[in-house]
Length: 303
Image (cartoon, rainbow, N blue to C red):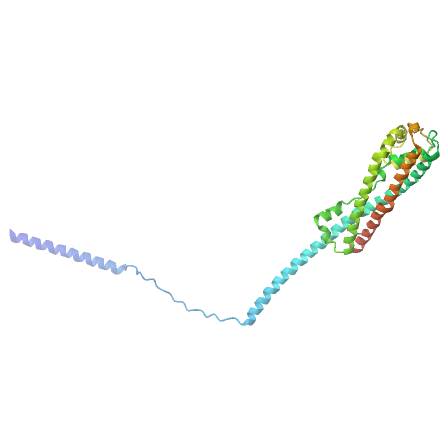
């Protein structure tokens, strides 16, 4: 029994040894077929390119081309701004010319009205001095109305909307003419002086003319005359009345309280204000306005 057992043990050991060898052989084959990845990275060497330095002429040419490009861009931008400034200058010149041309017509018309007012004042002054205050001629009340009652229609209010806009926005710099710049400054002074004189006229109308009118002026006469002539221009209404054959009765109210000398002095003083405004303020504005219009016509295509 012991021999058989030993023989069986040897067979078992042989089988186990054979299995071990087969396993080693199989592992070796697998290793051969799939080798493990190497830990070292392969380094690929490229041939180095040789950089030769450029000739100095090429660097100079490249720099010159860059300079030309920058310079051309600068001149193009300057040209664009110059064209834009010229266009704006022409538009401002047209707008200013239109405003001043219209105002020149108004100023000339107002001056003619004021000269007529001076004649009415001359008549009224002489009448208050020594004529009848109870039997009034047909011409008296038109002169009385023109001299004392009509104020606003004789006032010249210059327009300066465009000029103020140009001045406040700094756009006056677009006008390159030194003479034009000076004339625009003179015009601003003339406008301010005209407005100041108008304010003086309004103050004089407020006192003493208005209290005098409320006390002595026959507003019933004025209402009847305006009823017959509904024109909005009071100067035209007075002219039409004088040219017509109609006579509207009128009287000086509270005539017993009227002081001839005081009334005549009021007329004389008011006339002095009107004459001063005509000779100084309005004429100064008209003269400066005319020079600016001439300068604008010579410098810009305004047709």
